Length: 165
Image (cartoon, rainbow, N blue to C red):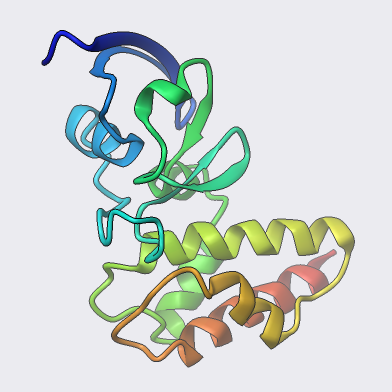
């Protein structure tokens, strides 16, 4: 650790974490290297591929563009936390049923991003269109599926959640 290490305290997936972290360490590297939360991946490191997507204080962010020290006092949710809480269980099942995952590298970011859209849609009481789903996911790259199965899975969950209300 360099002489630029700072102490931070944050809540990660419901647990309070206090660590010393280098001032230049990205949030995704902190989560993966220091906390062993490897669900969020490191892809482009420029914020365009979406593999490092996490939720900070309820907002979707790119973990490669945010420094860990910026999260001092924040609440961070990774795909592990979203999964463990059961928040995305139906979405995970739909991804599996619709073959919306192949290599799995983009899947955590896709799930977090799709869940953000589904939460907003549920709050507004409407089902997002396929175009809206595509727009929401446009910042997440997938090189395997061609997106059709992913859009199908998100749409199926949106419809099921709306019907369950």
